[in-house]
Length: 311
Image (tube, rainbow, N blue to C red; front, side, top):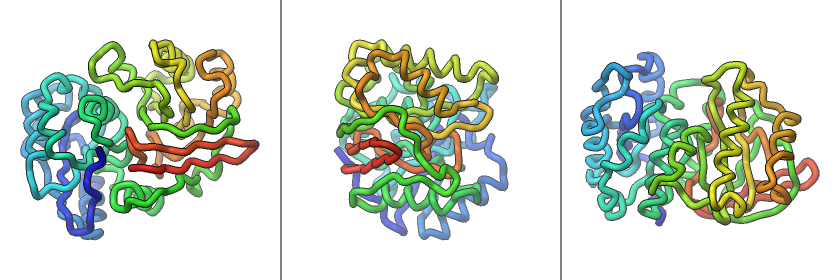
């Protein structure tokens, strides 16, 4: 199930299903609001988006109410998370998924929002989107690329290629191959929170898009490696068709050789295409891609082709 595309002039509802809007710097808030308003969108904010507690979030009840209200509001055409955080998985068991299924809309965000996006796709079949949060539009770095892919994915319905930004310059082939399948993934450590729950998407015949943020300092590569190992050791881990790794902050110390060593130790990932340094994750600029949408993925020599077929 794919929601109706966004049109210029439509209303976008900003919600705070993880951290509160109140943690966002005022200049970033103003920049984001101006950028989207100048594009012609009507930007509204959920009733409880500025509620804030000791964890810089808000109550489960408030967050669920705002999500339900956004899907039920006939004027709202797209829903975007204001920012990520650490606790969106708290709300998953309280969501009325029939509301979402009966009122399908664009839902977009990244980082902690990975849990919500993949859960909604799993429970309803609605394609969701891993991409810009509201605050992503508040930074000038790579904004043209970021907005271009926001529009390619959420405004237009044509197939599109995910190509390197000027900042990324190129994608790196870790393993050659060709595949076609539905995308699942996003933030790796957040996706892993869904393991063993009713909200975890099937990995069988899927193409994984994976990234992560450095919250463990010098231990990042070790943490990422074991999180990846945990993911592919699930029952369906041997049915993965391909893996696309995003870009990483320099503090993560993730490079081609490190990724190659990781992949070489993963028997479930043998003989499938794997690439690294694609423009998504905790980086700018970033591409937007569909969770549940289809991608055609080819990696040969030094050439990478990522064509999003349905979104």
